[in-house]
Structure formats: C-alpha cells, structure tokens
Amino acid sequence: MKKIAVLTSGGDAPGMNAALRAVVRTATYYGMEVYGAKRGFDGLIQGDIYKMKSYSVSNIISLGGTILKTARSVDFHAQEGRDKAYEQLQSRGIEGLIVIGGDGSMMASDRFSKAYDFPIIGIPGTINNDLYGTDFTIGFDTAVNTALDAIDKIRDTANSHDRIFFVEVMGRDAGYIAIQTGIGGGAELVMVPETETSIQDVISTLQAGWDRAKSASIVVTAEGNAEGSAIDIAQKVKSHINNKDIKITTLGHIQRGGSPSAFDRILSSRLGLNAVEALRSGKKGVMIGIIKDEVVYTPLDIAVNTPKPLNDELVRMVEILNS
Image (cartoon, rainbow, N blue to C red):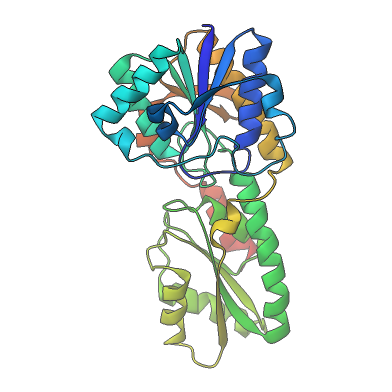
C-alpha cells in the first residue's frame, strides 16, 4: 500500500490533531503518500483532498479541534454521495482510508468499506467514550478534566451560598463523562442513562446530606438521563423543595474544546501509528482500540452495534464515596 487518506468526521474531540499527526508521520516513515480530506466525508465527495507531508502536522499535537475540519455529512448517506467519494479515491490512486470519529463515522465507514471492498481503519474519536472495542476514546479524558475543573469552581460558589447545583455534562446516551466527573468532583449524586434514578431518589440523597449538616450539594447529570435535562430535573426537585437555593449549569460544548490532556495525546498517537500499520498489514473494516493497554481490532459493525456497558464498579463508588 503506497497511498492512503485520512479524515476527521462527526463531532470534534481533543486529540484528533495528535492522531492526525501520528498517521501522517507514520505513513511518511514507511514511505507512503498520505492525503487529508477536509470536512470529513463531504471532503471526499467534493474532492477537497490534499497531499500531506511531515511538516503539515508540525506543532499540532497540543491543539484542540482538528486541522482537517469536520462535519456530519448528509450526502454520504446517499448512494450517489458514496459513489462520488469512491471515485475521488480511485482517481488519486488512494488504496486505504483512516477515519477518525464517533459511532456515526464508524457506521458510515463500515457501510462504505463493505460496499466497495475498500480498506478502512476506524479510530475512535469522541468525548462520549461510547464505542465498544476500546477502553477509552480520543477526547474523553480531556472532556472529563474540563468538566471536573468547572465543577471544582462551582463547588466554591455552592459552599459560599449554601446552594444546590445541578450540573449537566455531555455524553449523549452514555454516562461515562458524568460518572467520572461525579467521582472526581465529589458530587452528592450522579444521574446517568445506564441506571434509573428517580426524583425521589434525588430528594432522599439531598435530604440525607442536610441531616448531616451538609449545606451545599452538587448533582451531576448526563444529558441523556431519563428524567430529562438538568433544567427539567431541577424544576421537578424544586416542586418538592422550596426552601433551598437551586442553580443549574449546563457545561455544553466547552467540553469539546481545549488542549488535549497528556493521556489523550499519547492515546491518539498510539492509535494513529497502529492504524497505519494495520492498513499496511492488510487489515480492513475494523476499528482500532486499546483494551487493558493492548492494541485490539474490532469489526466496525460490532463496534457500532454492541452496547458498551458502564463500569459497575464506578457506579458502586459513587454510592459509597459520595454518601
């Protein structure tokens, strides 16, 4: 394999640039040509593809976001769009593709790889950490640290004013950011999609804290929680408790930005290097991941369609340590 391409797709995640750097530098090391497609699969369709050299990725390892830009492609869902993307790859003699992105990107990669028998290696890049086949996805650690920094600051004002704060973090349908942020930030309660927590459970937990003379409390909620958003939950709690000052903070996209943590830089570099070597060794239609510090390869359809369970030990820790 002499020519490969790389793109970033879906939501951005801190560490994507570090992965791009590793892909380009590794391909160059092996004497391969590497091309970057701008704005994800849309770049493939439109032919917005350019040759990358080692210097193309200089000084980007510390940058958040992605220098290739990213997008969620509507056109790639249509057969016509995928045909155009394949033609663009073929016309340039590109023999393999590395896709950095989340579950939607892995799903699109699986469909494309099977339809055209085209070698694709997926790299899990999403702050949600919701892809099966890897212990950690690119950007997750940085997002947790960003959320944790915010909660530390919120704790200061909560204590100063004897307030209850409901803090909503990202994660879509997964509670990984919420559970780790809650443990690290000493939250009184963490509400995640994977476990059922009723409004009465929230009230009981808060009441137990007040019985111990706790004057301030923080409840961390994942955005996909069954009881609704942090605003919804706070309003429901307030209808039962009217003698407490309740505030709401939704952290939102601040969790996507910023310089990647050391963990994410190393993880991204490791995945990027091994993705190139996977293409060279003939692998295709798989997502590369790290499980128990070992590089593993999971078929793309399994990575997307297999639920990734929340660690029960983390749920138990919240119950014991934050009580």
